[in-house]
Image (cartoon, rainbow, N blue to C red; front, top):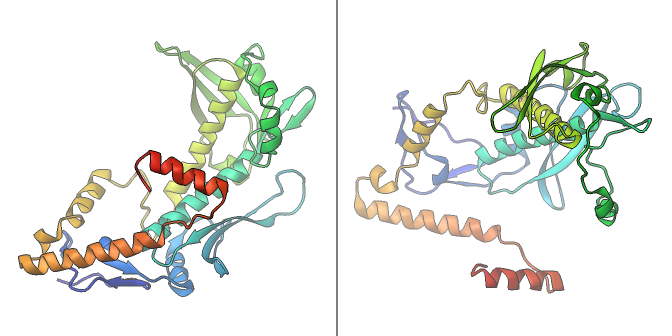
Length: 320
């Protein structure tokens, strides 16, 4: 039966066995491969990924090696003006990283790039001023210094409706549709958008959405609302992200079928190679390759006090 070709940057370990699949094709499982990715092979992988055009995926390299970087095309979150392109953090790609892990790195990078922007779109009005308390640009050393004064105190605005009047997301407010309390004491709040709008996030939100808050405390409701908005954004990425036309992370994919393929391709080499001696030789090669790969991932510690303290900590735990 025909065998799936290897992708750029993939090399089969010598005498690696193939697995027969239910569609009358065969493949060499990814854990029987070694990897030597470079700029061109990573670009070839990215070319097979499709997502929202507002999130261009960049591949580049510097002195530190290969990296993937997500761009975001959209308006400035803090002032009016034309749309612009901003860049997210760099996600390093090791040359020996499996192809599937590179694809998943892009998937995670897209999720986190959207979350970063989303947090800046959540505006809260308090004491006559507006702020974006969930954004990622706060001065953490300063917040740590002020830690005790920032400790949470239970309080409410008087009602869920009153609290929602202080909140806007991409310029759109929310209104309470339904409020229920469960037997466990949690509160189920169903919200709807006060108006329709265009944006990176707001137009992907359903007409009505539900959040679960442990209490009616302002803090709990606001955190629960943010969690719900992030979950909606993540679901958009799951449904939209495709590799070679396949939405791997979509919940329309049968997870039991994924499990069956995983079990089939993860068989022990002794079940795939009829000759016991040949199987043992291959297992030895596989272990050697895995050991060499693991060796490249061990960080080199300095002689600093921090590094020595980390070594001591690991030694006390019996690892390292």
